[in-house]
Image 1 (tube, rainbow, N blue to C red):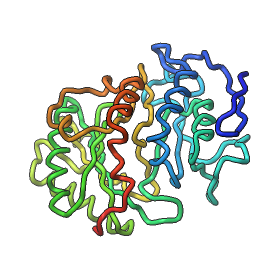
Image 2: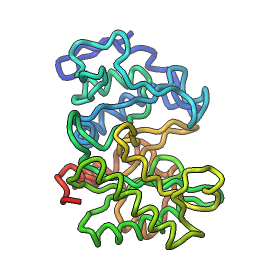
Image 3: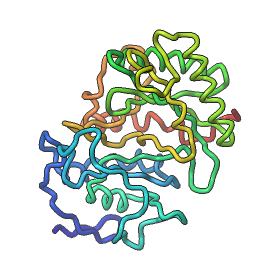
Image 4: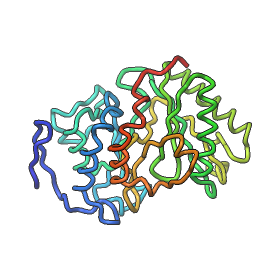
Length: 282
């Protein structure tokens, strides 16, 4: 057990040498990444209930589909950790992030709304069905950016940290209107390019196409937060992208390692900073 002081909070960190990824990436390295990325991560977690995907025995136990989702605050949650009336955690400071990382919460997922408020973001989750992949997602993302711009929305792209991408915008609207809009745009794309895009959630319908998952905007749904780690054979990050990078396509999910994303933060700051501003009426 290692005792540390994080922002005036005393934390007991355990099993720091334990590998949490099959490649040997340890809990200490997970904590170090989340500590160093916190200046750009915390603003995107602020005032949002965070759902965690925990891997107490390491991601090796089941890979990307393993671990377990945890919504409510677990037993033994320190009294200084902010919790909502629903018993969920809001990670609003570095100490909370470090505490969660010590619990092997590798992935951090957030809703599109802040606590007690209407959604302030709209997200399109681009999920490719084999043999489609990131190249097809890039094509859809760029067309989606243009379509959203026609309605006055500024789009931001990121990798999912796995095989897909997400495109998000800041908006001002109620939940029903956001869901209606997202569904209609997805349907529009599926009708215009049926060989490339589907808005059908059924798994067989997705083969060889990019599924535009508009349902991620439901108030009970969450999406992996930008800068969150993802579980897998090696640690990858849901990394923000420039639109020039999306157009060039010279990347894959494995390129966005924790070290690479930290270097990108040092060079570019927060590429998704614009999402922190209020968006136009939808």
